[in-house]
Structure formats: C-alpha cells, structure tokens
Length: 245
Image (cartoon, rainbow, N blue to C red):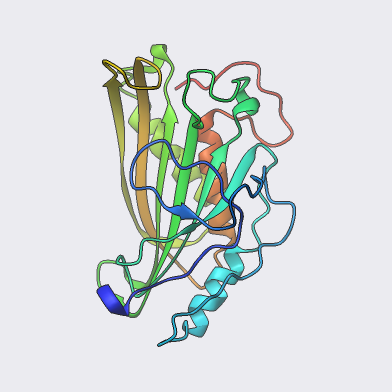
C-alpha cells in the first residue's frame, strides 16, 4: 500500500503560497504562474499516471468531481503534489484566503503568508481499510490566526469543530467515520527571524470517509470550512466585525 506502490497524482492549478506551517506540499505549474483567486473555470482532471500503473476508474471519477469546484472569489485555490505514502493513490488541493479579503496588506508583517489556509487530501486504497470504513478517505488541515481576545477561549475548540460539521451538513456531503482535533498554538520569535514576534493560531485537523465517488459537495464544504475559520460572512452577506467565538 505504501512506498513504491503509492501514486501521488500531480495537481492542475498554478502555484500559490504554501500553508503557513506544517507539512507543505509543492504546487504544480511553472515559475511565476499566477495565483487564482477563486476558481473561474472547471478544473481539468490532471492525470499523469505512473508508468507502471493506471489510476483506478473510481479514483479518476473522484478527482474529476473535485475538479468541478467553484470557490467564492475571496479564496485562492491551488492544486498540490499530494503526499505519496499515505495511500496507494492520493490527490490534494489547497485553499487560502486572499490577504486583501480581510483588509490585510500582503506581507505587512514581513512574511508572505495568508492568515487562513487549508489543505484537503484525497486518499484511495482499492483494498479498503477497516478504520476508514471504505476505500476513500478525505483528510484536511486548516490553520487560522487568532485575535488576542480569542486566546484561551474555552469554547473555541467546540466552535472550531462546528465550522466543519456544519459545512458538511449544509452542503449535503454524506460521510462516515468523522474524527479530528482542534488545537490552539502559540509561538514567539526571538533573534534574527522574519515574521511577527508572536503568532497565535487555531489548527483544525480532521478526516472522514465520503459516501460515493462524487466529492464535489465535500470540496465545497471544505471551502466553506476555510471561509468560516477566516471569519468570512456567508456568501451575499456583509461582514461588520471580525470573527468571534
């Protein structure tokens, strides 16, 4: 299942900035390729199979369904080179909030990073895994910067988890075996290192098994999850205040 038998399928969108911390993937596309705010076109299925194997038809269908994603314009969507050893077949995308969306100038603290970003990874094991209760698994990681007044809020983990569960429910993304963690992190920089002196974040990690191979609703739910973590208002509404918990 792992090692040489794993196949990470390259993505199809141009490069964008990496998530602020954690395991970073490599975006596909040539140097200097533009970042896409939202998705203005249908994502083409980016299959470049390994010379020794062809992706299973069900994996092709699943990735193709992710390619139908239409993100709201505040979000930047990019494909990633998926981690190759998590399952026999993998595919990944990243979503982050444009700096201008929340009134933050790009790199105003000396770091070219988004305040809120996330990754969604599709895993496929044709043989299935007992813990998954199926042959597919979606794994996500979202990180969002916290405001000082949010630090230590005992309700933050509960509210953070609800961003995901409500997004899945609202988009009709049927699933089983959902699990994850919500973690508050703080880091303080010392000496000659770029970036703000202090970073306070909330990190949300989760995975679930989708029902069926049409994952379009799951992709839309993930985008809504990232938007909630960033404090974006519902589509069509106007934000008057920053996210509170």
